[in-house]
Length: 396
Image (cartoon, rainbow, N blue to C red; front, side, top):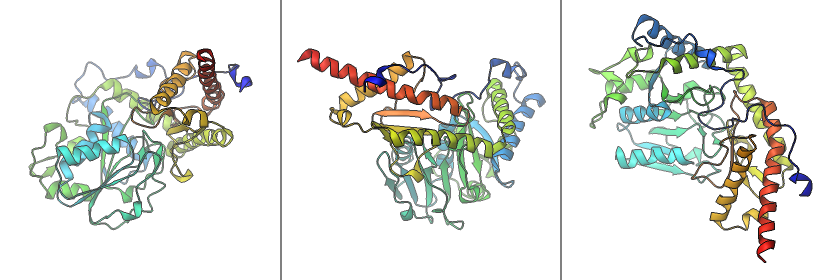
C-alpha cells in the first residue's frame, strides 16, 4: 500500500459530488440568474410566463405525454410525494416498497400519519430490492425509482403492467433527467430540480397521468388535507397549478436557475445527452471497482446500480474486522480527509446507510472529474488505514 500513500497530483476541477443539492451544470455562474423575474409578483404576466416555460420545457425534454399534467409544487420532492399520498391514497389497498431511508419515511407516513389500514409493506435491506414480482397492481403502489441513499434503482419498468387496477406513485427525484422513465407505467411521478438539474432547493414537481386526475376528481379522502397539499377545488383538478399558478410563492431566482439548467440540457442533446453523461460516470466507477481491493458497489446486482447516487461499501477484511462504530468512524475520516484536500465534498454515505461513500454521478458532473477523483479515493483509504495501523503499533 506504500505507493498509494503518495497524494495524486491531479484534482477534480469541480469537487462537488454531493447527492443533493447537486453540482451546478458545467460553466455555471451567478450571472445565469441575471434575467430572473425578481421584485415582481409571481402571478404577474412575466412571472407566470417564466413558471409556464419551466413546465412546458420540462415536459418536452422528459417526453412526458401531452395528456399528463406537470406542475410546480411546494417543499421539494418531499412535498410532492406527500401531496400525492395525502390526496390519492385510501381508496384501494396499498403496496408500498422500501429499500432505503426515504422509502422507509414514506412507509412511516403511511402507517403512522395517514394510518392506512390495508397496507402491505415490501422491504429489502440496503443493497437489495424487494421481490418486484410480488407487487399487487390491483392495489395502489408507492415506490422509488432510484434509492438515493442506497444507490439501488429498479432495473426497468417491465415489472409494471400497462393495465392495472391501482395507481403507481413513484418518487423519482434522483432518476428523472438521468434515467429512462416509462411514463405509461406510472400515474404519479415526483422530483425536484436540485438533483440531476443541479437546481436550488424547496421546489418540487408533480406529474399526473389521466388516471391520477380521474382519482382526484372522483375520490375524496375522509382525512382533512392541508392547503399546501390540495390539488382539487370543488371536486375538480386545480388546472392552474399545471400552468404556472403555484400554490404558494415560488422563488423566481430558483425558477430562473431551472430555466438555465433546461437550456443547458437542450444544448447537450436533451434527455439522451443527460442519460449518456450520467451512465458514463457510472461506467468509469464500475471499471475502477473491478480492480479495487477495498471498495465495491452497495447495490448487489449490476442491473440495479444507480448512475446518479453511486453508493460504495468498504470490503477490505481489515475494515470488516472493525466494530460497527469504528467502521462508521473510519468511513467518516475518509470522507473528511478528501474534503480537507478539496477533492470531494459531501461524499460520506447517508447517516442510516452502511459506512462507505456516496458519489453523485448525475449529468451535471463531468466524467473527467470522476476520473480525477478515483485515485484520491485510493490515496484517502490507504492513508486512513495506515494511520490506524501506526496508532495500533504505537499503543502496543
